[in-house]
Image 1 (cartoon, rainbow, N blue to C red):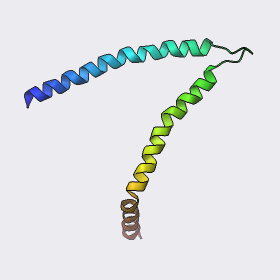
Image 2 (image 1 turned 90 degrees about the vertical axis):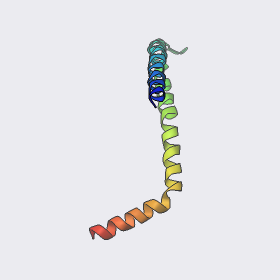
Image 3 (image 1 turned 45 degrees about the vertical axis):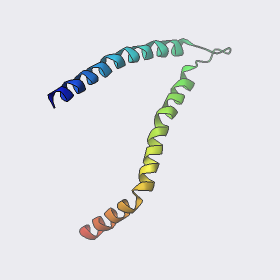
Image 4 (image 1 turned 90 degrees about the horizontal axis):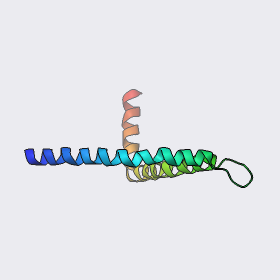
Amino acid sequence: MRKRFSQSIILVLLIVFISSDVSAQCAMCKAVAETATDDYGNHVSGGINVGIIYMMGIPYLLLGFLALVFFRDKIKSFLKDFRSIHS
């Protein structure tokens, strides 16, 4: 039991330290994107930010849709019970 706990702590610490090195790269990418311009002098960063928002939002939308599909009956029964209690 104690060995498993210590292994879990070591794993969490490794993930934290590895992810800090990865997140440092984002600041450099952001700086390059903010200073980058196309042939007409337009900044490229606006398009990159919109792309990041889409990539970040799509998994949440898919998970929400899957939860709605799989738990539709439970949600309906909960709402029915909730309405009967409060009416």
